[in-house]
Length: 292
Image 1: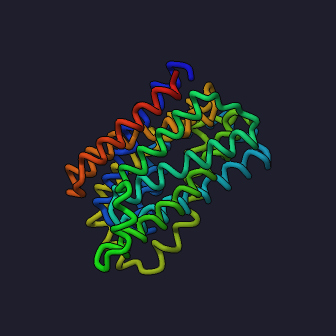
Image 2 (image 1 turned 135 degrees about the vertical axis):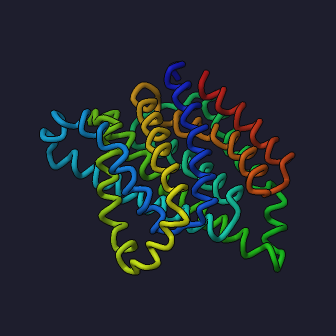
């Protein structure tokens, strides 16, 4: 992996962990995703117009098809993630989602995009997955699942984490193909895909306007944080995909777990820090192996 791509992935991981904490603290649903998308449309409009003024008019059906499908997959991802955050701990949902997603993405990249994963890369990917498992609770998570009081919450965390991971893998492979093969601009892919997200999220905002307005008053600050920083983290990853194999970039993104393990435990009081820090060390080792 080129050092430039590696640096982009590390920075993106830090930013990604920050906006996930903001989303968790908001405790929102699909309407929160709608708030964030509307703010993205406004805040990032100058950038979208600047880069898309001469490019977007030349897009054909194929480009718009990829942008539209990307937008739909991102909606499904965000809604599943937010629902998981309402039902379970961030330090269960987030690592399962971030761990299963790149594993599936890497396998798809090998079989669908013809990428080759070296032995060192394979070991690095497995280290990342093992670290994610420890952060999610390690072997104790199976015992916790049997507990009458904590079991349902853990099981829901595993379910929504895995569901989110499937959507992560789907949009990662799709967007990776778009920027690597179709040579779509990462900035334009993300910005115009946001309009598709708005279309699908609008009904949830308009269904009960009074509730939406009430939620806006309590959640707009968190939505603003997500809207400002989340596009940056993902666009950086897309730029990294243009110069590095997707099968390396996808698991390397999990460096965000280093930050989430600390931030989630300290700010959200989701305990068991020693095990999660050990998992973070494994993730860091795996990411370095992928970078080398």
